[in-house]
Image (tube, rainbow, N blue to C red; front, side, top):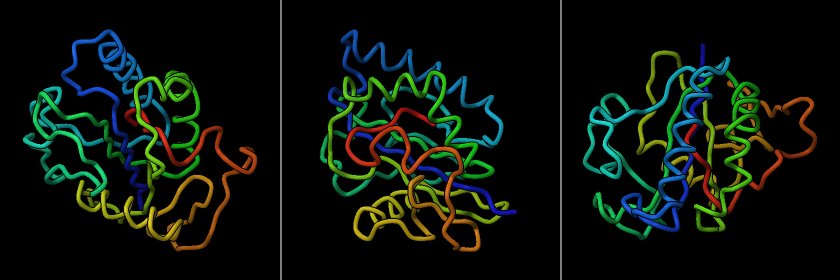
Length: 193
């Protein structure tokens, strides 16, 4: 049975190692978000570094998720002291459970504050695609999907909530959500999912 991969990417206003209260608050909110999402129906797994160290994304061992990668437009640091990004890579059973998890509870509250933490880039902040059962998506594949979405818009191999696709490539619509998700699909980043 196919599984849904979700990659989120946002450029932070300050490096992850910044000692400011705002960065500390971002970590606290992020921890609450991960806890809530991990219990949500339809959530399967997310990429975790073996060491779990803050700010060492580029040097971490991500196991089956592959070597950490970022979109070409990310132009900030890559060391533990200078990295200024938040990225997640996760697996879900379907689009609707992901929508419900991301637009409710602590994640919804964090989305309302995203401009406190993230720069507005004018680029997509997330992308979905389907993977076959047993396949673990990689960071490099996720970046390629996000960049494809930015250049070409939604397609069966790189799509958004607003323009989603079923595993067989047919367009789908999330019922009972209106014409679009409650927040923009470009601009500020997303918190971990």
